[in-house]
Length: 576
Image (cartoon, rainbow, N blue to C red):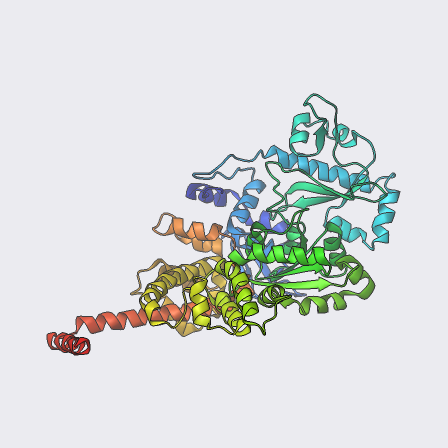
């Protein structure tokens, strides 16, 4: 895990970047007096109302009221996290981002240069005179030049050393380390291109850097697909093909559809479904789900309806359970045998495919239906077997609403007492008297976690405070509240529309800065739109809890000796 970005570096970086250059590379701006004006990228307009002020190093739209700094602009426009925005700004002024207390070896950054150069070369070959067969194949699959461009699709021509020769300016060992060249067994054998006579799909991380490639034959060769090997910058168990493109195509991405192959992702994008991703030759795992849920709150797994597809779905359930929650949804779609997303959307259209996704089965329903297959629930031993099969899986779910719903649903199917089954799976909720003292401690722990989550929400999306109930916002900003949360809300309330970068900057050199930087560097738990109602609910709970605690303290402070004696006597009578 990378260490924290030092405060001094962020200050130095903000002093070197020019917001006009940052925004001007993405939005067409025209000099207008002391400002630069252009069409706002955050809402549709025909008359420019978007202003960039070079003196104040800020932007403001008089149409939609969006405003902030270069950091906030990049986070919103490019759908970047706080550290990704810092990395982007640093690259623009030729600075390398340092990290404090970095763990593990630092990746060889030259590999990114090698892989990017290879991607450009593959794309040049696809536009070359010898690409007729590959281009014909892509056209037969219904792909346009625009989609090929957006996904950076290229061509690795026939021959053993085409890429090796084209990238001769790089050290041969670097090309091997990047997974582009293969050395024959023995360590001293011939070195040759890994990708030959294949359509090549660059695999990008969430920052848009090329980290590897997938290759698909367009003739009769075998194997049909090959992928880059694992390298310092490429781990198949962590990356997802198409996630970068999906985030770039849809600002405010809320859901993704997981499919099986590169061509499925690209074909869906060609027909307007641009939120599909694919694993890289591996089954979807827990780390994949953790990555996805940092960007969206709904994942729909789209599998073939055959035995292999249903086997893949069950593995997905097992991988997802430890990271699911009431705000992290998982659903399943099973396609007719012989079909895949590519053929369905080409033959039946976008609306039909979207209808299939709309009818996806929630994970809880699929989980119980799968376990119930072949079990006779009219027999006591069948019901007992269902409960026994489900227990180890439900134990892996985080405690919360989803676990509670599954326990209740299974209890209804197996005709057993839900509270008894809850205890058997180790659930920490329930009405039993012997759990009440534990529940009190648990509620206190949840309250602390909830307060941290609320602060996280405000740091990630301070603009949401503008739409919060004014009374609740005023309560959160109570001047008598000395918490970091209240301090943050007071700053946000003073400057509506504040972005994350500006907010963090307000605390430079002050207590709480390290906490805010850490929260800003975390991946968002939900999209802004999905998070808004949860933020308001948490804010109201925070205010109510604080007021309740204040009343309790006041009651204790004004308590008389007689009141205390009466309560003590009453308690003694109850014991007697």
